[in-house]
Length: 322
View 1 (tube, rainbow, N blue to C red):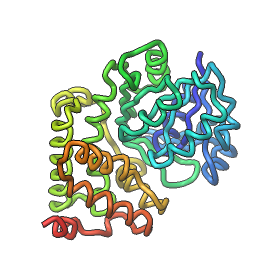
View 2: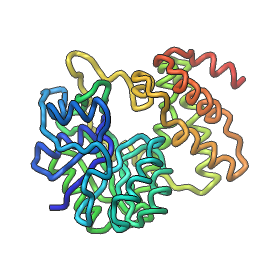
View 3: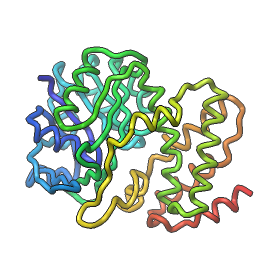
View 4: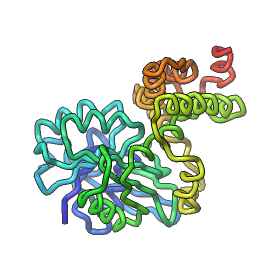
């Protein structure tokens, strides 16, 4: 069985690692700081709607100490803004033929990783999860905790993609190999352009309107740039009723990955990989993208200023666009 090294043990990486380790998959996580110390001492606490378990998972404090070799698949599960430094570590310590799978939002990661590692795989992640304290991750869907679509970033499916699907299946995930994975990643990007609104403002009526305008702007850019993406009907059929989202300790998830970045005061969020990508596509086809440009600018500032989630009224952002 191929060994899996998951770089980043946050909401997604930590929950996936815990479930795979529980299923006797050979998996190691790369984590840092208090989170790494907690995992090394006590394991990963995985909280789900029906249980809370503590699972021992090998942890390395850096990529260089993860012993990546030719029999390793690397899963990148860091936020997109953290890809660059991790990639530089991988270049130093991993063979160039190492398969690298991007378990990340956005579409930019596959481009930058493929420039250094030809065997790059896109992974579409549909998994409501959270990581807010060291040593603990929460996965809010049950009995299937997440959906994953896997394929070569430049198109097609190979034995590694199929093996990764099988590994994820052992952990109880619904995973499939798809030959056009980036088409599905652009679909997920459309879903994620509202992450900054959820994080900064919340989803009241004004917030919902702002998300709708950001998505409409993104769709127009994709169509003008001839970027293929799955339809809403296809996306709904993929999810169907597989993800049954519940509560943990009497509460639902506070918010998505960007909301969690603000809640943890990390100083950055994924806005450039999400709204920034729409701005870049728009510029390439001479389409203005005022909504996504505004969200990029305000989200970047909110993260840097470490403002609490929900502290910026969506109505104020709409007023800036009028």
